[in-house]
Length: 272
Image 1 (cartoon, rainbow, N blue to C red):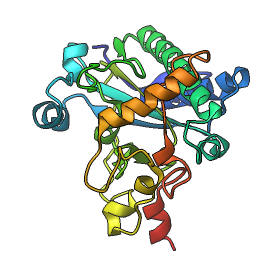
Image 2 (cartoon, helix red, strand yellow):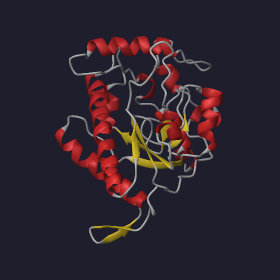
Image 3 (tube, helix red, strand yellow):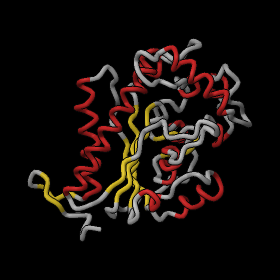
Image 4 (cartoon, helix red, strand yellow):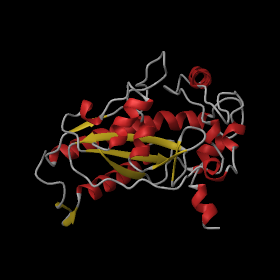
């Protein structure tokens, strides 16, 4: 690992690697949106210690096939995780109907491309600073028989303190759950983000909401279970519908225009 992860000069200012990474992510998404149909709100960024015991717990208790950071980058120190939230109009376009909206499908495709390019930029910048990194694909890294991936951005986002799981099995962040997650492993040592202690999902907080279950008209999501195979069938149907746009195996009905779509609803409830 390089000698230091702090104190570098950027435009005459002294900033930490953490701050530099955050600024790079913010600016990249901002300028990238000028050339796409999809528009995004300002991203959220969090950092996990690669030695966090939750990584091993995830592998042992939940997903045996899930890679540890050190299995992907031998001297891993930090996992960088970010959430890129869609503008609200995209979620509203996907609120009703049987199929995913064209806007939602295109947002999925364009954001995945953004994440691939952003990770390359982050890796190059870290390399210039003397650090190694390992980029992760935004999607399509799952076993087609089990539908389980070897690197779950959702679980890693939870470990990094970016948010909490909702009843719909998605991560709810301070900017909701309508968007895409990306992550990158590096040997730069960056102070981890604290994990939130309170729930972000109203159902888990006080049982006052099950809007996501009501929005799933296909029976894949219930109060007590999630059928990933049935969900995948719906995603494949949308993939066939929008195949000319690109790889759009999406649905998203359960997260669109519900209390957690754009913000942390528990915080709003607590603040009155």
